[in-house]
Length: 296
Length: 236
Image 1 (cartoon, rainbow over the protein chains, first blue to last red):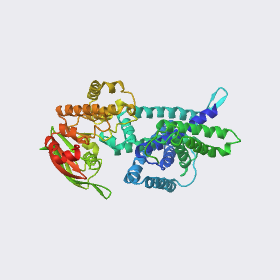
Image 2 (image 1 turned 60 degrees about the horizontal axis):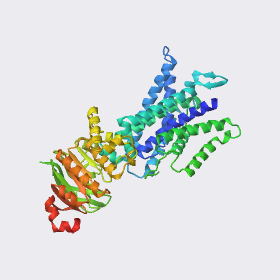
Image 3 (image 1 turned 135 degrees about the horizontal axis):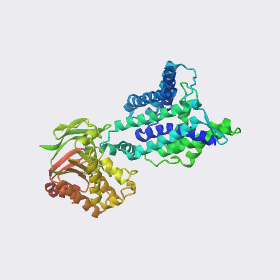
Image 4 (image 1 turned 135 degrees about the vertical axis):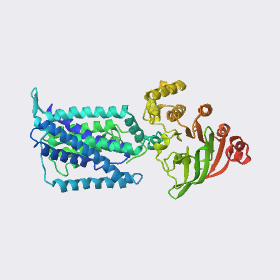
């Protein structure tokens, strides 16, 4: 039971990050390898803001934490938009390799800047894990894990509704399928790309918040969840939104289950990536991927 | 005063020149057709007008405004729609979503609803399949959807790129009837066709495009009776 909740919780985190990869790939046809580092920036902003606001005497901690989170989300959303405008937009139409290398460059740039501002020390902060645990029958479960699963699920449902039912969501699907035809409908592709980066980065901030109880904050915080969520997006079928969710949850559950079995715990990461390789061998487009003319 | 005026348009793909300074105009209420062989530059012309391709030189004047450097969403907002070559409907979206995308720049929700109902009245098969993924429609149904989608934007000028491509003779006639009908409702039409015979028949005026240059122009009837045109495009 605890393993199931923790697995789903980690899975929800991976899924939230994987959505950012997959949406950006679907719309801009590029792999944004700086996405993991947006999570890191989000985590640092939450950390810094909490350190600052918790000392404001009269404010309850939940409120100052919430404010910190909202500020982090605003910063990350802007950061996502700025990264796209400054680093990726000039390369639209250039070779996919140029965009890929640039994305890796942005990733190191963000890590470098974080190290300059906050230093290389690992810091820990407890926000969601202040809520403690709850006893369900004979099981002890962390509230933070429950919140992650519930909020993660709500966010994903909202995202799917947004994409299916709204004018902007429809335009995103149209751009993803045929950019030129979408332009002929009057869709402003630049605006849609910006919105996509904004949403991806906003989701990443949720991942930052949910990831804090199980990690310490450092400039390389984003690397591991970033690469695993990318693997999750590929497992699910890059470009596919339900695929990213499925891949994320699958990978999260596999990771927690492996970690809970002492015989295989030390091979967890290897097992996860072996899973990626096996799935790609059997189904190169990922579990829910669609056949597309354009490939990576 | 011409509704659309294309002046000395030069377009390059890398070092290859696709359009070598073409000029033509379309007046309000006309059906104008561009005919020419594959690779003559017909599709390039349309894509340049709607802003998907940037010309190296020349200008495009629409409604007395220079739209040459405008982004495509502004061009569409100013009243130009396109039925693209190969239809390019959104295969993974429903028939309904395709129509809604056609109305992307329309603000009046009630009017959009009415427009969609009108489409379903005109093409009941699209109404029956409104929630179906558009990629599952037949070629003819997809062409009807592509035309309806373009009309959702209430264009002043509708550009149609090879609307008869890949359709059975019966459907081709139906498509040309629809074009005539749209024109009679006041929509100005710029038509690109390989089916020169049918295109010239409904066109007020026509231009012949050959490897990036306009080599002949005249009324539809004039070109249809010209011996050279008959030989090159109408099978003798």
